[in-house]
Image (tube, rainbow, N blue to C red):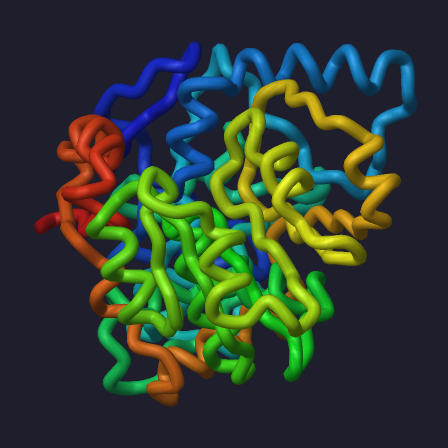
Length: 349
C-alpha cells in the first residue's frame, strides 16, 4: 500500500506491506483522513517532547494501561481523523461486514495491549491506502453522510470534550483564542449548546470567516483590538470561560493576564514545548485552569450524530484534498492559514 511515513522526524511517501487484521479486527480502505495540527507539531517538535517526557517521568513505573509509544527510528504512519470502508474481516468479526463505511476512535488493542492509531509502529493511521481497526470500536456512518464530513467526527469530538470539560453553561460567555481546527471545533460545540456571546480571536482573516460561519458572534484580529476588550464591549457582565486553542508558548500566560477575576481557562491547544506562566496572576485572580485532551467514547459518538443530523455544517472547514503522495506538500501548505483550515487525504484521488 502507499503511505506517508514518518521516520526520524522526517516525512516521506513510500510503499509498505498491506496490514493484516487479527482476531476481532477488520481491514479497511481509507476513504478520507483529515490532517491534524498535532501531526504537524509532532513532526516539528516530537523529539523535544519525547526528551521532556523522559525528564519528567524519570524512574517512574510505566502505566500498564497507557498506549504503547512509537519509536521514531521506525516507520510511523500518522492520521487519526478517518473514515474507512471495510474490505476484509479478521477472525471472529460478527457485527461488521465488507462494504460497511465506518469511523472509529483512533485506538487499537490486541494481545500486547493498547496502541494509538497514527502514533504507533504497529497500527498505521489514515495517511495510507489501508488500515486495521478493531470491530468493537467501529461506528457505522449513517447512509447518505459524505465520507469527507464523516472524517470530521474526530476533530469535532475534541471540541465537544473541551466544552464539556470547561463546564460552561447557559448564562456564561466564551472567548476562543485561535480559530484553527481545534478552536473551530470548540466554536461549533459552543453554538450547539446555545452559549453566547462567543468571541473569537485569530490573526487569519480566512479563519475568522470560518469562525463566524460556525457560530462566533464576534471575530477579532488581535492586531486591531484585544479580544478581551471586545468581550467587555459586547458583554462584560456574564461569567467568562476562555478557551486557549492555539498551543504555542506564551498563550496560556496571555490568557491568564486578560482573564477577569474568577474566570475559567480551558487549555485545549496542544503545546508541545516547555512554557512559562506567572502563578501570581492565577492566585490573585483566583482563576481556574483546566486542561483537556481527546474525548470520551460517548462524545465521539455524539459528534458523529451531530454531523449526520445536520446540527452543524462542517463543509466550510474542508479547504482541500490530496492523495497520499500529496501529504508532505499538504503539511507545508497548512502553514498558510489564509489558504487552508483542514486538508483531507483521499487515497486514490
